[in-house]
Image (cartoon, rainbow, N blue to C red; front, side, top):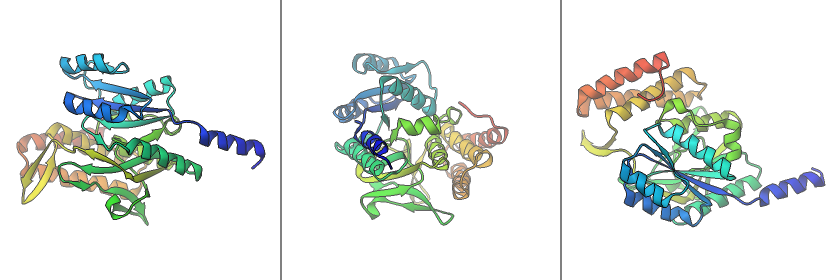
Length: 309
């Protein structure tokens, strides 16, 4: 590498990280949302809230406290909201974005650790798509599994098993740091998926283009998963309403049938869709609603009808 190239690399490594935090909301608790905003305010260069048609009191709060809020008249879905946030961040001059759901709770050091991890990976020549935190399910008090493909198998790993930086294949969007350079190459999130598996789809597209995802186990995010846990067949099961279950089953089948996913991921999400639909039809209430939405999800996946339900 000549001196000019060395200078370019040093300049790239020394460029400041201009960070936009993007929070997607849909009828949030204002107390929880305000706490999240206060947690990220110190490190974020910009805070962008994209609201999917929340009630008037939320709109008034955003108007008073979030100058960069994007208020949508109705629910346009997670993917569209994230894409709108990215467009705003790019226009502001951000180099990186971090996404949050409205009920996420990052530890005070999380953002700094993610940025430091990205810098470390970049200095080692990695083409980074995502740096994700360790995610703790607040209800179950346990670290969520991360996923990595090894020898044609989808392996679950956990930050609780080890510390430091873990190479992974996919990460949930909430809490994830993504450089805009990766979004420029991989493209936006897939609007047509609306909500479920949006992050998985984007990560796997990034992987096909040579990007890599990592988890920074020292960065911790507390997250509220699911709508209501129920005790079913002796187990605490996190259950989404029938409408949300529709999106997971539809998107899982459509992605598996129409997209070039790695075979371990195809089998994993098809198996999960089958298990989830059968379990909910047999045990959840109202069963007829779950059955109807499951049939509709399968039909729409096969015919390619995506977007909002």
